[in-house]
Length: 192
Image (cartoon, rainbow, N blue to C red; front, top):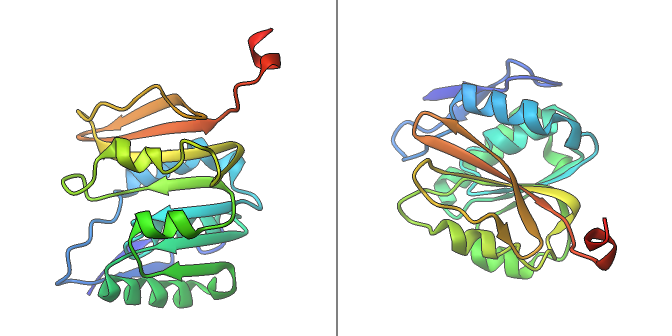
């Protein structure tokens, strides 16, 4: 059985379990480190939604760095069992909810808003625009909240999706992370 490590915070250095025979692709450590350094100021006391969670390395990193709560969504039941083991290993059981269900079904049922949403789909299976459209009406994201989409670097992503505005993109080899911020367009915004 392989492992990845928590990079920083309360559980720094803690090893997370990775199944050997199941297809999982934890985010590269250098990508995770860069992304978390960018969103660090949004994490203290944050609610965090981790879509396509895999073994939980992103959500657990958020908890280790001060997030208050993480909702994990992983549809593969075997991988979700590793996710639960990793949550137990790190001691964050009381700060998490794990849904073993399809991302689209869960997002239509969730009745809360998040400070940060991280979307890390298998590139070949999911259309980035369809995933971003889950958040276009802003119901799942708090004002000034962030939605991060991990995607193939050649995938075109829009500058705006509903109330989400693209604020930056970071490329890491063939990976790209696009950062969106929720900003309601109001008359007062227009008069500035």
